[in-house]
Length: 143
Image (cartoon, rainbow, N blue to C red):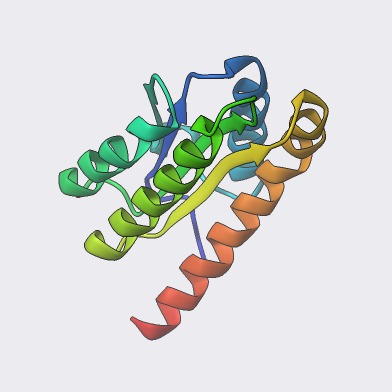
């Protein structure tokens, strides 16, 4: 499949941006390697992972994008907040995907500490783009 004409939105949480920026660059680089065009990749930012579903929903409503990628990092702290943010952002992402029938790849890392996050940011971008391509190809077969 030729991906050069497909528009993709990267919806990015700025919280933990020292890690998120590495993941953002990894996703962008891999999209380009796989034949997506830089001019067709838009980036939008929100404060945190809980704001991602609203941003994704707005992108879907615009009908400008063939696919979306949610990018963020939620790192476990000492309170229950980690579980709330992780669970609710994932559920929100899934709900938007199903509501609008637009593929949304979830690249919101949920890790226990900075070391785990650093290990995942290097490979997650490639995994997410490969998952997007597989999803797009499968959906294309169905029509």
